[in-house]
Length: 134
Image 1 (cartoon, rainbow, N blue to C red):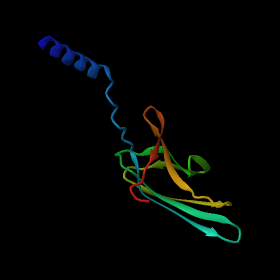
Image 2 (image 1 turned 180 degrees about the vertical axis):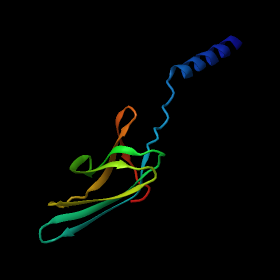
Image 3 (image 1 turned 120 degrees about the vertical axis):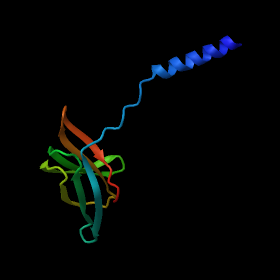
Image 4 (image 1 turned 135 degrees about the vertical axis):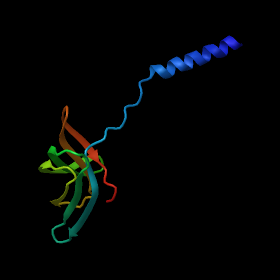
C-alpha cells in the first residue's frame, strides 16, 4: 500500500513538471489611462456620428518610438471600421490625448477596441489595451 502511495506521488510530481510554466504577463510601457466613447444619431440621414477619446501615457523611463494607436469599431465579432493615428515617439512619463472622429451611415451598435503598436526590443509589439474607464 505504501508503494502505491509513493508511486502516485511520484507520478503526480512528474506530471506537474512536464507542463510548461505559464508565461508571465508581458508588461507594456504604454497604458491607456482613460477612454471615452460617445455616439449621436441623426434621424434625417440615419447616420451615426461618434468620437472616441483616448488618454495614453508612457510609463517607462525611456522614450518609446513607433507608437501607433488603432481603434477598431466592431459590431459583434465583425470589424466595421478601423481608425489609426501615428504618434511617433512618446517621451518618458508624457501623456498624449487622441480624438478619433467617425461617421457611420447605418444604425449599428458599435463597440470600440483599442490596439497599440510600438517598437520593442525584438521588433514591433502590438497589444490590445483595456482602459480602466470607458
